[in-house]
Image (tube, rainbow, N blue to C red; front, side, top):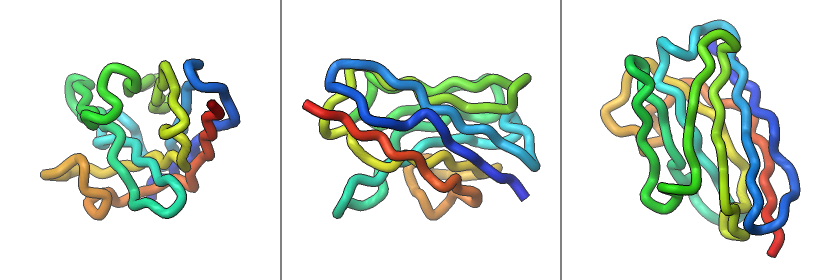
Amino acid sequence: QVQLVESGGGLVQAGTSLRLSCAASGGTVSTYIMGWFRQAPGKEREFVGAIRKSGGRTVSADSVKGRLSISRDNVKNTVYLQMNSLKPEDTAVYYCVATQFTQDYSDPTLYDYWGQGTQVTVSS
């Protein structure tokens, strides 16, 4: 059973940067597709991005491409979400997710493991 624990959220000003971490236990991040989703109040969960198992290639949602990036540290068994040039509309709870197989990175129902989420609030 994989357990995911996010950290690094907080209150920041627009235009600044923030890095979220997702520490995994019970499984090795390099053997899972690791991803991030976010959910703002009153909205559905939104795909942010994912990193593939082999090669570490990443995919990102068009809405965040160029500002948010995902990376992985196999030694620390941790996945990161680097967020730059933050905007108030980035305010949401950010979730780390994992699955071994998926045909659609953006479908939240296809991820088997979810962290508890970390709040990111961007003030204008």
